[in-house]
Image (tube, rainbow, N blue to C red; front, side, top):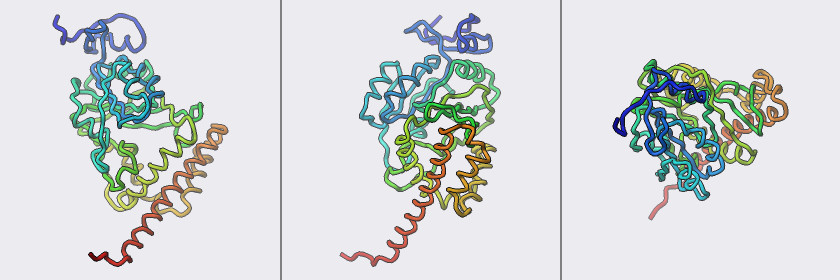
Length: 326
């Protein structure tokens, strides 16, 4: 057999390998290591994620290829990624569009039809890897939603509205792109799609196994990231209020966008967010991490509102300033 031929085996090994070994699953062979890989290309967008990658990348050893899309990290991100056999590609953000994930989907030379988007603070457990390998061979859909187990301050958050967090992460790369939502803040909102959703030309189903999301090990990291997110929310405020919801982002995401149109019109949104997350979504059952998390969610909504107000003041000031003369 040639180096690029496909192989099928039925040996009993780990849970991920068992799924890979099923007769219905087509796999590629890594001739350098003599091992078999699922025909999936993984994108890991990063910046200064060396520590997280030490947990993330070993859990992706089942995938045929892994691309780490780096934004000129100042730590050992590139070296760690290369050490685990990932291909490191440097990304230079223009300040508006495209952001990192869409850029990768457009420019990375994938050798597989299927791509999986994984953040550096996420871990693909063997059960999920096995299910991915099995499902992409069935041709039941063109994309799959993954649910995340959300960990905060070392504890899984089971309530607070975060018991389920479904996102379209696995799809045929020619058929999916993240929403195009450029802003003109010069990079203040970050260079990676954080809240944009994938628009898929095809059918999407849900996977049963879950992704582990070890988010925000410290409060300072949470605040730093959500400060950027709040700026983005403010920039997109008028769009969320007035523009139609995209019909291609999936039923659940469309519903959330419609509810967001209503929510953004409510008074005292930070208080509403805390009461909803801590009491109605039982955040108090998550103990002190739940209390801290729900308080931070309310603070995030306050930051978004404050940034919208800041934008309005800046616009009024600009409108009343006399035009400069030369």
